[in-house]
Length: 93
Image (cartoon, rainbow, N blue to C red; front, top):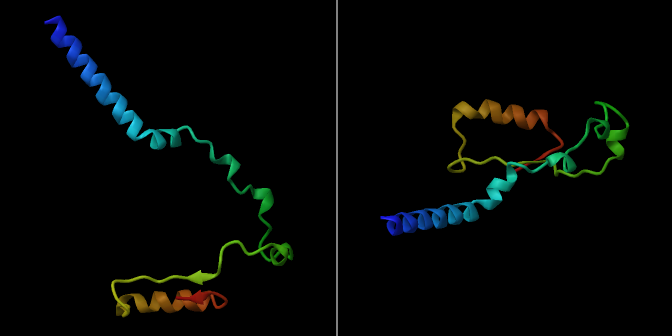
């Protein structure tokens, strides 16, 4: 009986080790500190500030619209047009 229990415990330990190994990168995200990548409020200029024009454009001004096919349903056309009208300087794809 003791030999069977030892084999059972070893097999369970190996399974647990394999599971932890296979999800290790996900487990490290639980303790990851993202503050090094954060944009702090001191780095964000106020709205309508002249500093906005001096900052480099990091994110391209493109609106990507996706749908099942090329035709947008009538229900969404008003929202689509509103988005395009509100962002005139953006490229629409």
